[in-house]
Length: 311
Image 1: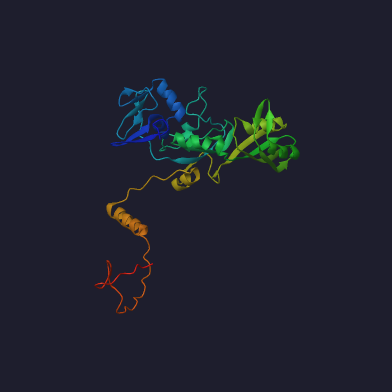
Image 2: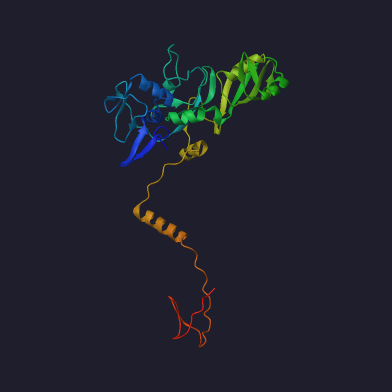
């Protein structure tokens, strides 16, 4: 594999490290692509030197800085479930000065990035991670992970129109993939719908419902792929179990370093398994006077005799 294709390269003296763009993503600073932009803008330094190429490698013990501020080395990948309240913007800083998700998180959390976004007035499950690569993996449309919502709408619900959304719909030139929408309950002019989408385009649920003549008055995300909102209280954050996260995302666990004795036992066991199975011993045949004498190295003929070859 070439250097271009690999993020971690093995050299003669051991690993050369990790590409700096990926390192920045794992540190929760930015996605890999945004990290490359930071480098191109001349904002990233490695050991005090300006980084000119995203192909630069970071090794253990190196110091990386953004805008001359040191960045802590990446922690292990972590994923959190957050119950986003209504009225928070999914960003670190809002130019309009509105309250943000990240300003309202509990103290003691690592630097986090969001997996996608929820609108200002949307509520429910928002996934947060300290690893930009994990965020990218979760956001990829090719993964086809279902986002589930409960939507309160105002207007007359046409269940036939909801059913037709399963074939997808195009609105003002924007094509939306299959949407699974069903009526849960109705009270006067208001109704609750269950909605499931795969693409998660900007304001997708609201725009599609508006096209059907329905105004979304409340939107709650209840699931993102296998991760559920459940009974998580509003404003609360809960970390996803590391094994669950790795299993669901298909991430390989970091290899455990084995101790000398354990490694030696494992090698011996592997060797034993590699040995061919011993054939069961045959009962010795009675030797007649004319038979050659047998030794571990073969048959020894009697003087003047011939050894017959065994089949």
